[in-house]
Length: 206
Image 1 (cartoon, rainbow, N blue to C red):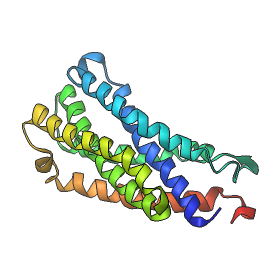
Image 2: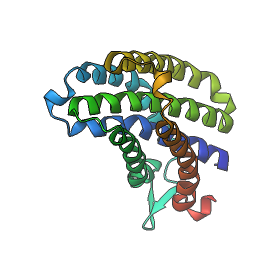
Image 3: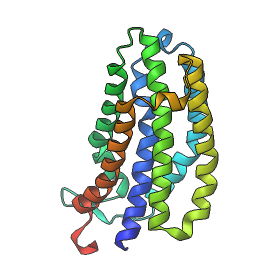
Image 4: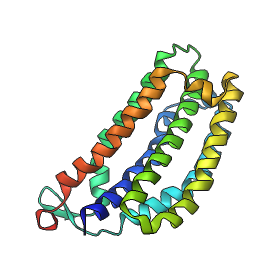
């Protein structure tokens, strides 16, 4: 496989992580703390399921071209090993929420939800551009998956910001810390793809 092909497949892998990690901060919440948010989380899951499954299918294609502790492994094993990096992105986003000094726990989760929906949109647009650069011939198939998902995110982001905080998504993004955090994670996302290939690709494949 070429360098571009490995970048493409790991791009799919870390795009999957961005969707998969979305639910983690809400898992520790009490039922009453999620309150109005549970319906929203269920709707997000419905829309995210299809594209997340497609990314995982792509990740399975390279086979055992990688190694961990001198054992041949799949790309998914490399992604699992990369979980601490992905968790660090989530902690950065949670820190943005804490910086708002919102006292009510339900409101904290509502703010985090709005922030994460915006981040999901930012990341899927970023991933689409990156994947198209690595595999231009897959552009149409990817577009058919991304467009409905991105449209949902755009609408859901604005609706949630209005519903919970009486502001637009655009107004939310005037928060410099939120905007910079999106940008920093995007830079790290690209770097993580390169670092993961170097770390886990078997020497005979390089």
